[in-house]
Length: 156
Length: 282
Image (cartoon, rainbow over all chains, first blue to last red; front, side, top):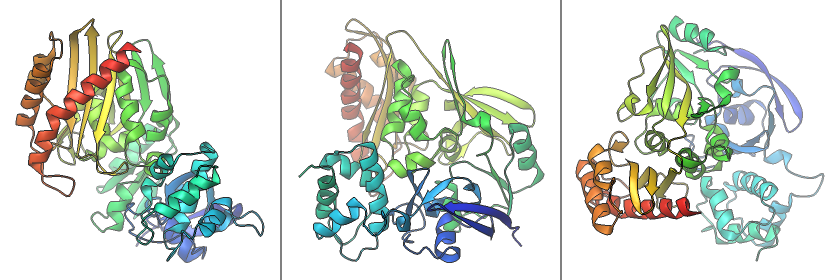
C-alpha cells in the first residue's frame, strides 16, 4: 500500500486540494483528478513533449514530474493560455497557417512556443526549431508549425 | 511507495538509510521515466528539492561550487562559468531541449551515469570534483572516479552528490564542448569536451574527453600527452584522435554504427580544438 500525501496545486491560478500517492505524475493528476485533459499523454517517458506544461513559466514535461513535488509552484496548462475569449497569438497563428492536423501534439507545442516568444520575441525559424526540440508531431512535417510560430514574432 | 521531503542533507541521509529500497529524487527526468516504464519501483523516494544548500552556487578563488540540484538551465545561464569552466556551461546549454534543461540536474546527471549523455563528459574534461555525502560525512572525489560503468557509479548505497566543484584552471585556459547529433534535441552521436591552454601556437596543456563512445566518459592520458607540446598540426590531431578511437568501445545504435563513431572521433577532435583556439583568441 502506498502512502498518500495531501497537497494543494496551483493550476492556471486556481487552487486544487488533492490527496495523492507520491508516485503519481502531474500528467496523471491533471487528466484524471483535475480533468484538465488538454494536456496529452503521448509516450510517458519524456520523448514526445505532448504533456508539456509550464511550471513557474518554464516548459517541463508533466509525465516526468511527480505532483507531490509541486505545491506552491504556478502550473500553467493549455487551458490557461487563452486571454479571455481570445485564443493565444500562437494558437491564432497556427489556425491561420493551417498548421494543425490531428492536434494531439499541439498543447505542448503551443506552450513551448509561448515561452520561446516571451524570452525571444522575434525568433528565427531555426530558433523556433530548437525550442520545439522537445515536441514530436507525426502529421505536419513541422514546416507550417514552425512558420506559424515564427510569424508571431514578425519573421516570415 | 513512501515519500519524504527532508530539508537538510543530514535528514536526507537518515531518510535514505531508513529504507532499504530508497532512492533520491532530483529533477525526475530519468527516474520518473523509469518508474513509468515499470523498470524500477522504489520503496521510498527521498526528494531533494527542499534542501536549500543543494541549490547554492558559491564562488571561490580557485573555482565555483555548484549545488547538485542546479538545473542545466541554471548552469547554462551562469556567466561566471568562463575560461576552463565554460566546457560545462557549453554542455549544459546544448544538451537535450529546453523542457529537459528546466528539469534535469547536475547531481542527477552524475547519479544516472548514462553514457549517451554529455554533461558527465564535460565534468570530466573540467577536472570537476564531486562532494559526496554519506553516513560517514562528506568527501570530495574527482567526478571521473565516480563513473565505473554504463549507468553505474562508485557511489555507495545511502550516499548522494551534494555539490560539484569546477576548478578555474590555468589563466588563459579555454573550455569547449562540441556535440554532433542528428537533430539538436537528440543524444549526441559523439561529443567532445576539452579544456585547452595554449602558449602562443603551442599547446601547453589539454584534457580531452569523448562522450557516447564508451560505457563511461572516455579520457585517455596518452591522447592528451600526444597533443601537449605540439602546435596542434593535422598530424598531431589525427594521431591523438586515433588513440582515442582505438580506446573507444562504442555501440551500434540508431544514431550511428560503432565504426562510424570511431571515424568521427578524430574529425570532431580537430573541429573542437580549432573552435577552442578561436575562442582563446577573442
